[in-house]
Structure formats: C-alpha cells, structure tokens
Length: 341
Image 1 (cartoon, rainbow, N blue to C red):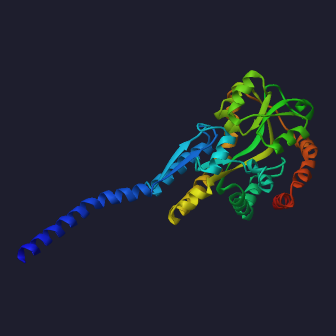
Image 2 (image 1 turned 60 degrees about the vertical axis):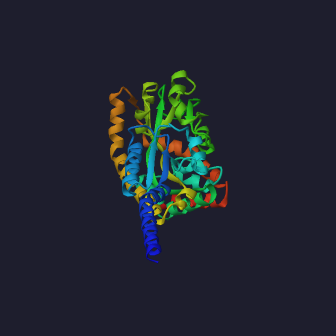
Image 3 (image 1 turned 30 degrees about the vertical axis):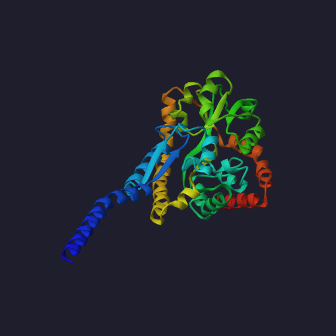
C-alpha cells in the first residue's frame, strides 16, 4: 500500500511539474493571440504635419497597448495609391488609411459634402471645427460605418487648398483651359469645369511626373504637400485661393476595430483624437511658414483679391444645388454645414 501511495505521489509531482513548465508556453501562445497587427498606410508626404501625426499615433498605439497592438506606418503611397488604399481599408487588407470624406461620394454622397463640396463651403477653420468636431462629425462616422465598413475615428486636415501652376493664373480669364490634376472624384471635376479649367483626373502619386511631362499644367493642393512632394520644382506660380478645405478622416476598418478587446477599441479612438487634435493645431500654425518656404524656393505668389474670389464663388455656386440633388440626405447635409458658418 505504501509503495502505491509513493508511486501516486511521485506521478502527481511530475504532472504538476510538467504543467508548471508548460504554463509559460501557454501564456506566450495566449499573448501571441492577443497581438493585433495594425497597418496604417496613406498617401501623405513624408515630413508633412499629417505624416508626423501618424508617426506619433503609431508610437502611442504600440506603447500604450504595451505591445498588444503592433502598429506599422507606411506613408507616401508605399502600399498603393489612394484608390487602392481606400479599398484595402474597406476590406481589411490594411487597418487604417486617411482620405477626405469626399472619397465616399459614390457610396454615401452626404458624407462627401463635408469635404467642402462643391468648393467654398467652409468660411474658415472655426467653421470646419464646428462641423467635424461636433454632431455632424459623429453622424458621418456612423454613416461611413454602415455604408462602407470603416469608422472615422478622428479627423485631421491638410488645410485649405490653393493653385500651383506652370504658367501664371491670376483670375478666371487666365484659368480658362488650364489642365489641372484632380482626384478621381466627380465633385472635383465638376467644380473646375464650372470655373472653366480643364480638370484631369490622375492618381495622387503621379502628379510630379505629370507636371514634368506636361500631362497637366498645374494642380491644387495645400502648401505642405507642395513642399513635401517637391511639386514646386516643376511649377512655380502659386495663387492662394482658399477654395477648398480638405479635412482628412482617419479611417479604421470597422470589423478589425470590433475584433479588439474593449480597452484597445477605446485606446484606438482616444489616441487618434489626441494625435490629430495636435496635428490640426500644428498644421494651422505652420501654413504661413510653408508659404514663405515656397517663396524662398523660388515660387511666385500672385494676389487673389476678395473681389476676384467672389467671382469664383458666384461661378461655382450652382453646384451646391446640383450636388444636393444627389439625394435628400445630401441636400440636408449641405444645409446643415452652411448653417453653421
């Protein structure tokens, strides 16, 4: 009997020892299962305030999650052009990208209105904040979730857009027939057609080569991107039109976000809002300096008087009604945005 009890005791000790030895391996397996890869890819220029904000947010996700999120940052179209990145974010090949809400025009035109459609809809930066940091911002995020499979977890910006051309453009007369690169989005095409330019849809990443080869005569962009992508090497005339304010939705694949534990979901949302609130502040403070940098690089900045701007606004004003006719929801969204200004 004593021998049997001793044998049983030895077996129990051995089993407990084996379990103890196996526990770290099991813990490592569980840890590996809890690690979530977050690929962040976009088309913004390296060194721009927007890309710098993504750098900071990537670090936040990695550090504050204590390694449970493996955030990886791919700027400047490293994983594809804007159209590709949008589709990849919808299907979950990447987890995050950034784009103007107007990129959803075909699926949810009421969202597209918040990107400034059809031009001159935003009066100033305070107007932008009233729209996107308030109820409308929450509303379009929910619409995006339901219709496109992404959640707008925060809003950054590249700011107001201006003209950069190879020949001087100073008014409507000199704009006529100028070949301007536009995104592959209808509202951008319609806007420049209304003003008499020749809009040429091209991927974001092709603008430098298109300028150098003469495929386009110019483009519209923010000052930071002009510097970052060195487009001013091919075109030197700047017209500060402030015709379009481009907010950028930080778009996270909703299915991936929902797969995270609740604390990591909260971390993604709160840290994104923190990083891009800072980005908006930096962007606005640095825009004037970016223009001075363009001047120092040899760009010629032509004046854009208020009287001339009023002509451009009048020429394109009919597009508000035309764009609003897309759907009752779109018309209502345009009215709400304009009412806040």
